[in-house]
Length: 163
Image 1 (cartoon, helix red, strand yellow):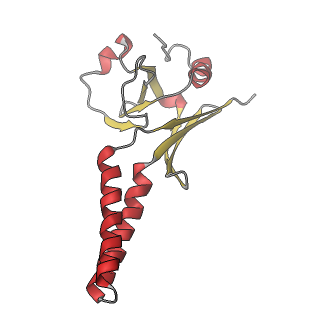
Image 2 (tube, helix red, strand yellow):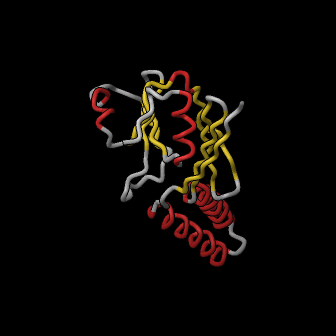
Image 3 (cartoon, one colour):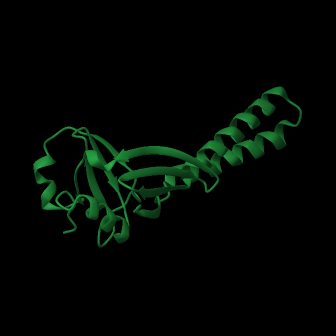
């Protein structure tokens, strides 16, 4: 029997990127209006417009977690238009899954990990972020729903903690 759980998390908007998006848009419009026909103004308009587009994609970010039969896939959705696969994890190689502030993670605090944050990016009350230690080399912070945690716990009950 195959288990399937899907979860979406919207990343908190980065205020710096939002401001930069509007500033670049304004630069593009102003250089277009003031430079009418000038080669330098056309180059500035195109460059500012392209930069504003790419900043816009990264300013509105969502993560989709997909759990299917012992495999967790993380996709990044840029501005609700583009999807990019970020990570695929075989949960047979998971060492532990616990809430970010759990005492079960104490033995991993002094170890060096490559860290990836696929959560909303802010600490909420209550904090629903989880930390997954993967294959002894990666620390992944994400925000699964209760159904996903239960599905992962069903395949590795001694490695998943919900305290």
